[in-house]
Length: 373
Image (cartoon, rainbow, N blue to C red; front, top):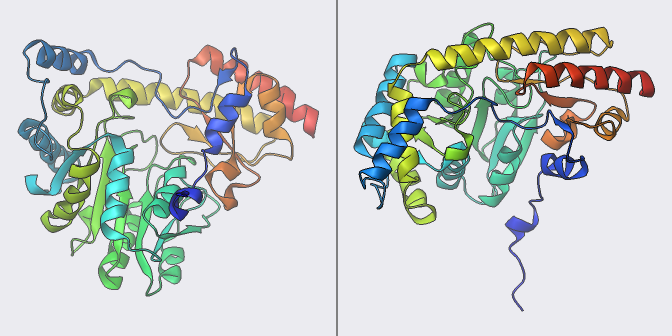
């Protein structure tokens, strides 16, 4: 009798989903990693125009439409001063598929993948799906990943390490010096650095820099998406940027699991990347205001929290029973252990919600804190 693969048996449903299902229908959802802004109108209209013109009815190139690939190439030149060849770009079904094909193309069974812990839930799961061994690395007190921690943990079995800045679930932003060091480590140890830059434009303090800017070899693969920057999570449009030889291997995976990204989404993404960027600035300014309201509330409760410099998450240290108490009172937050063993004792709070709901949620969290202390 056919059973199930060992790889899939190692993967369970996300702890984030478990919290959602436990909450009531009227709960304030501070667990969702999704901007609450509309997709820019010009991006929506580009998809409508493509559909009405019959341009979105068939497959596109495996890599993506030529115009979208060019827009991604130009985006990297504009935002990071990095030259990426069109042959080094693949449009994917969101950042999730981009991460998946990067791991599948570079990790053999039994090889290690290092990543931040607490870190995005897919790093562990997709490493297992690829047959690799996930290795979570503890963070600094400010919840950034220390390059020295990465370098100390590299062995002959290490295939790749993941860098995520701005980070989910912490909101931490790595410094330019850190990114330079990650590139050096990738070069000197001949190990792949996968740089997850999905939140790159949502930065409040500091600046986003990519390891690709500093690398002297092609040992950096960038994973990115329109999901967070342009509030396009439902469109499922991401990409990888890499050298031509690495992209060719990832394309081998992509063409069989996906064929091509959704055609309407590709036209929307092209417009988002190439069009006016003021909508991004407005969204980031709003997130900064919400972050400050949340931080003031958490600090007033007496909770220790590293100031998140980007993304739209805060990750305070919380007392035992805090998450359950908050959820029971009608506010969804996610326990830190859902993001790795080093997340125990923390909670992830998303402030991608309207200010009125956020203020109400802070009052609920304050009452919950008083109840468990």
